[in-house]
Amino acid sequence: MTAGTYKKMAGKLDTMPHSYPATESGIEIRLLEKIFTPEEALLGAEMFYTKEPASAIAARANVTEKEARRTLKNMVRKKMILFSKGESALVFGLMPFVVGFYEELLPRMNEEIAELFEQYFQETQGGITGKGLSVHRVIPIQESIDFEIEVHPYEKASNLIENAQAWGVRDCICRVQKALIGDPCGHPVENCLVFAPVEGYFENSEVDRSITKDEALQILRDSEEAGLVHTTGNYQNRNSYICNCCTCSCGILRAVAEFNNSAAIAKSDFLVVVDDGLCVACGDCVEHCQFDALNVDGVVCEVDPRNCVGCGLCVPACPEEALVLHRREVGEVSLPPATLKNWGVERSHN
Image 1 (cartoon, rainbow, N blue to C red):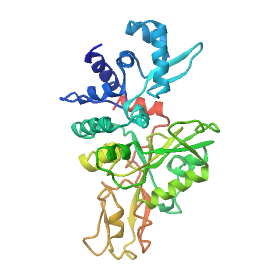
Image 2 (cartoon, one colour; image 1 turned 120 degrees about the vertical axis):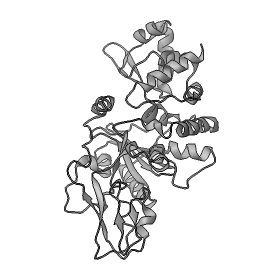
Image 3 (cartoon, helix red, strand yellow; image 1 turned 90 degrees about the horizontal axis):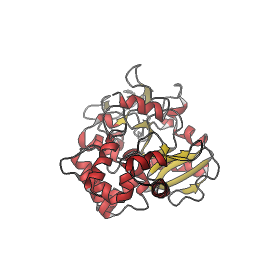
């Protein structure tokens, strides 16, 4: 098998809604070579996001069905591809890079893969986030929102956790990657929350530490205290994770901070508003804003609505209680798609 197999797989990944952009150096090929064996890449190059039986994939890859099924099951064990039960057998689909098999590299992440990812991130200028409809969206700190405003269920981080039946926490792949290249950010590492509708789902996981609902809610509060931004998939229903992100390590927020890619993440539907009568221009809020949305050059804090993502981190930082989140004007922020499938359809048409 040659590098052509990996190049074909890279091209297939780039046809997916999440994207996997090519580079002049071909660093994206070298990254795949470290993640997938040649046998896995051969099948990956012939797979689609839509799941299908091993026999169909084997026929296109020109290998026996038995050989394909063995390789595919091994890829499932490593959480590198999608799978589910079909009518008569397991069916398999290609998993995207981000959010996808990159996050599942946590047990295998090493310095070499971390360096390759960093080079890929820099060469594409954060292009792993793709173009068009954002992969992630911001969830505001609930306590920062004006109490008179109705908040939709998908806008509450606590709601996502309350409605689950199982909860887990894992190390942040982004902070692990940055630490491996010698640039740790200092924020907590074990605070990526995952949840599921089935009791005991994470009890036998090798990556996720099973926790209680109360522990998950406490991690949310601790993340807010640490100045981290809650983000999740940019769709309303069936989200299964909450990332607690920073512009110093998170690949998606770094695309905003380092390359001014405002489309990398969807803003929440909220904007911070300043009460001029209470603000004393102390600057405490500015220190807590990761997006250069606040300025205190004058006698009161001023907000740049273009940069504000509506995370709400600045609100509890204000000693005068002069800040609060208000809902933006109708049409300023698009309503998230209903499901991940709807997101994929909309993204593909952007």
